[in-house]
Amino acid sequence: MAVLAHEPVISGSPAVEAVGLRKQFGTVVAVDGIDLALAPGRIYGLLGPNGSGKTTLIRLLAGLARPTSGEARILGTRMPSRPMLGRIGYMPQAEALYPDLSVGENLRFFGALQGAAGSSAIDRVMALVDLADRADSPAAELSGGMRRRLSLACTLVHEPPVLFLDEPTVGVDPALRVQFWSHFRRLAGAGTTILVASHVMDEADRCDDLLFIRSGRVIAHGTGAELRASAATDNLETAFLRFAGLDAEGRPVADGSNA
Ligand SMILES: Nc1ncnc2c1ncn2[C@@H]1O[C@H](COP(=O)(O)OP(=O)(O)OP(=O)(O)O)[C@@H](O)[C@H]1O
Ligand SMILES: [Mg+2]
Image 1: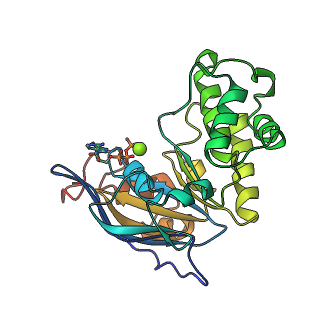
Image 2: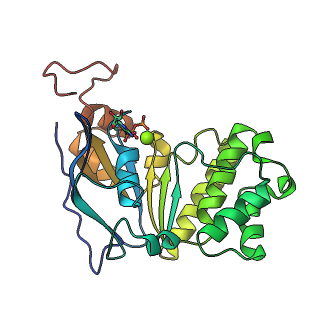
């Protein structure tokens, strides 16, 4: 089932654009000709089965991988672009922290790398992720959820206008997850554009728009309400099972369209 709930309509310049974006690894086409335009100040949820191309798409948009063809632009600049790195926050799916450095040192390092971060910025993000009392702990000694929190803090420390978050709340406890989402909403309210990959349906419902990808293609795009309507269900999870070509039990539907 391929559904385009609506063509995205954006007034003014998009913050993030992809034109015919494609990435092939050997015989695997991870991203298969994606076009998109993300408006400033909105939160976009990126959903799709394991291996559907979410991480690869984010890495292409953030300029961390080169497309096989097509192009990605951030704030009008073609990626990859070194000067743009300071304007992008990228939280990888697998953490890229320095295990021997403390919480504070990791933040100072990532802040400096991205051309910012006075001590007030570091204190602010440390408080946001509730790690101020662990400022001197080496990253290696944090719990898994705490490392995820530190990784988010490193992504936010330079206050980038464009944020790519790859499953940011995996392993984060429910109270902090709610705080993270309140913060994402505040950032969007201040004009930050956020693309967040997630498998969690209640997080998907907090996004302004959803992009559902399957086999490297955007097969559905719209608000949660629009996607529910397209799939003729009031349940987002059911809608996504349908987009993924699965029945309510998670089994492939008879027409075999889950390839
Ligand atoms: N560096 C790489 N080399 C070879 N193949 C890769 C590489 N990175 C990704 N792939 C392949 O590209 C496809 C898409 O992977 P990707 O990590 O983008 O999926 P994903 O949607 O993020 O999945 P998940 O939900 O599991 O995180 C997969 O088939 C994967 O094996
Ligand atoms: Mg991924």
